[in-house]
Image (cartoon, rainbow, N blue to C red):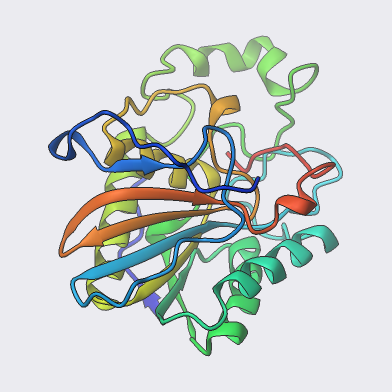
Length: 258
């Protein structure tokens, strides 16, 4: 089953402190900066509470360090499959009412063991797909690749939008819509969405009231991480971050999808 319209172009402890921002200025953010709890937060059984766990896919087999974006044919590596299994173990036995995934192979392959562990069928939602990027299919590492080529420089004129890919506002809008639809469908229970780093980080920044423009190196969204949005009714009032596959992160590929 496919959900939603196609988007337009364009550690060991949970955080012990919360932000000082008032509730009406954005949800609380729980956990240590740059550190994930080992397991996602659990539902406490309240009928007005819904947890939506947004999972980033596992490591991708990408020996050429290509920014793969939405390109087909990029599958999980052996390490990536092991990461997905650890996420599935972390979510097994929970009250998961809905499982949604991006249509891209790496997301579907990450969702597969979660489906087996939870007994849920994967529903594909194009709104949680990777962001568009003009450098898709090219190398973009610091020492080589597209960013050092003069022909690419015209694409870099506006990092606030950004000019080289899908607008941050567009990403935030489609991810927010998918999150809220999943929360409504799983009201009083838990839902899982398997997506990609930039869309997940953009959604979190949007809901926490931060600027969408950011340094990609500072995204708190590691491979196979779980960013959990805690809703009471329709309001997101807290965000939790966990890394069930933290033991497999050392040595993993650091090339993002977009």
